[in-house]
Length: 591
Image 1 (tube, rainbow, N blue to C red):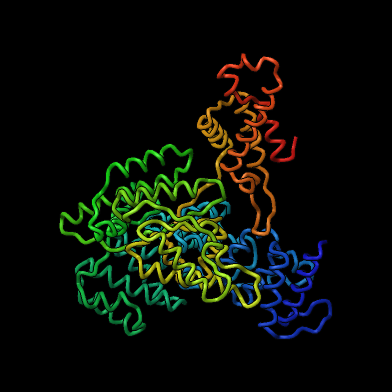
Image 2: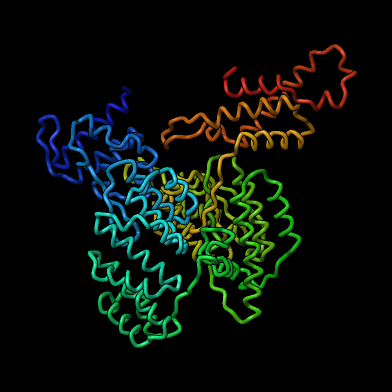
């Protein structure tokens, strides 16, 4: 056992004792603050100690960072508790399901459901769906979050499918949350009688917060059926229960405050299954172009599209950019017909491993944004922590503002944005906090002149956004960059070689793809969680290094010949399998 692991265990034991739980006959104490400090330090000494993260949650720290760590190390949940022979499930945290109830987290399945919820809340429904799909069988809390995913994205018919097992759940609180979602889904699909019947059960159920929302939705259903007096009566009841429930006051003021009723056919016909209302969403996006008075520059847009189409893979990215293109067109059509277009943030979060094209796509998006009239320039200012953080307090705000000034009317691209707020520093990261506070203020004050794109791994961006309440709301649109497949990596190698007047033989391509397949299947532990070997190597960057090294091997091979004067163009351009093998050996240290 390493010294770090031993120290982490000592701190974990202290945390357990400080929660009032006896360990090996030692006298416990009730000091929750001391427990929280001990668990936090344990997780810093050994980030893979899942029970340390669970201890932090048990002490009340249910942040996205903690939940992400529990998910990534979920198979280790309970390991330290078993070492101390603690009673099963004695250490438990609680997390917000987003539907009016908290739920305990004690095992890997709970961690999976909780992490999926953070992805839903962070506007990454596809990621949440991937996480949930790994759980087989009917597990009530997982089925509930499957329902939450469909509910949050307005896939009302799929809400009903996801929550079909809920009728047999013994947990009345979970059942009430499920009934609220299915009742609401029925109303949104125009099935008012069934919807209000289910919502009536929620009104009399065990979750007061859901009862208030169920009353409101019932009132909206009554309004859609022409029963205005009964609808207003329901809104008044809601307001009496909770004067802070904003929609109730608006619904009482305006009879035009209505539901948008849809159908299963409309939902299933979406281009992007996770976008609740593509037209409305993209029209809001396009309002920035309308406000700037800019028209679409077709040449710029087409140039950006050609550059994007030339990228290998990146299907999700291409879909999101297609939405941006449609946004300007639809906004102008709406304007021509006298319809308004509301404002929406243009900022983006690019998440995924290094070397997957995030910087390249940031430049393409800048050109696309300029062509669509969102910004006046397609310049991209690329920065990292060192460019924003000063040497002493007070200097950071000045330095960050100067960088932002240089990016005005264009795009500020912050790579490895999570490093802005560093962990483990005594007293916190005051410099990073100052940079983030300055950035947020300028994003608000210069919202018509500044687009910010942040980039990093999914879990690291989750931690960064969770560090400040203002960050998540400003980066509501997330574009996920998946690792390349071995075939795509080989294609990238061929493309890079062609740009350098080199060609790969068929055997060389096979050799490169074989090596990439091995790296793709090689999962390694890191302080941030498990990472694939190809992600650690850098995906596309690794391939570029391989090609450059293979060219050196080719030159060395050819320089040893006696007949240099007879070398043809093909000889000088050809990279063969032996060159690739030698390059891989040099870069990876493996023969």
